[in-house]
Length: 195
Figure 1 (tube, one colour):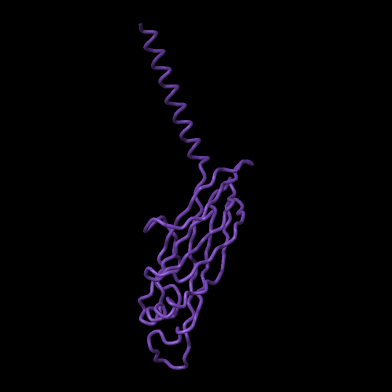
Figure 2 (cartoon, helix red, strand yellow; figure 1 turned 90 degrees about the vertical axis):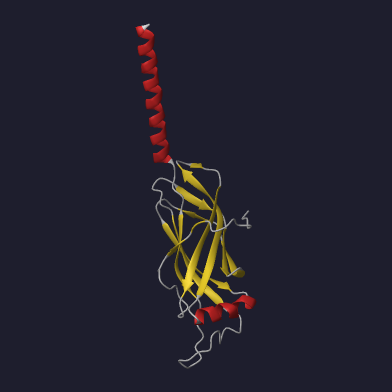
């Protein structure tokens, strides 16, 4: 009877040790998700030649906004294959514009930067211009993509990414306050899908 208890105890210890080993091995090999950060954002501010401006003056025509997106792969042992990345910019509930960044491959522990322009929706452009002139503008950014890890010659299944961020814009048309805006998981469920 004493031998069966010691065998059971030994077997339990082996199972617990193997479980802990498997857990720590999974933690070491589980890749981290890429990070997405808006490191620059600008809206051209009209120059009408005087120091006093009427709110929204000069935003009567179509315009564009420029964004600087930084994507970092924090993994030292796996590269990342990105599908197309869809960025949507909102002012209030209205869509200012959209931009799709093409699919690409990112090596281990690398950072990629994208600088691009988005043509603004003419209907929203003037309202956004008034808010910028009044120092109350905030553009919301939605990012939707899918990606796969490549580790030791094997490619993982697709992982979906839905992130959002809020970019406060000062009267100069650039990010006010924080200089970098890290995109994070959800303010709301997204209706958009990237295939």
